[in-house]
Length: 146
Image (cartoon, rainbow, N blue to C red):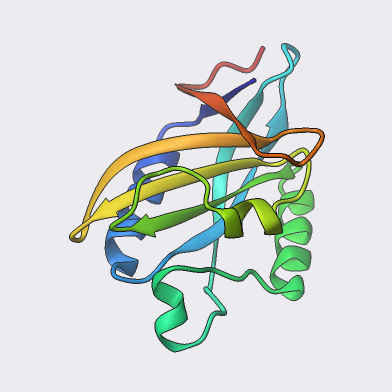
């Protein structure tokens, strides 16, 4: 699988990771499925990390009403919610056990590592069908609609 990021999407995720540090940022990825089986991320819906206090440093929660808001906004724009993004402050851009336990099938999961307040690696992942882990997803930059 491959997810293409429209211009500005990558930069928005990196900036939100930087601004949220030392806490995890999170949000929804709005876009569409592509003819080649990949996805095109056209925009983001920033969401408040609903975790309390210090838990925000290592965990994020997106409330059900935020998912509903995201679905409504995506529909308004003629798009779908195609994934979730979040940051890993001072940790690699790899899914954690917590991420695995809370992942939904068919979404792309973009993770940005933020080291000392500076965004570093940006990765994307897809949950395996048997929920045993994630498969890496290639990230493309640009507007490839096909």
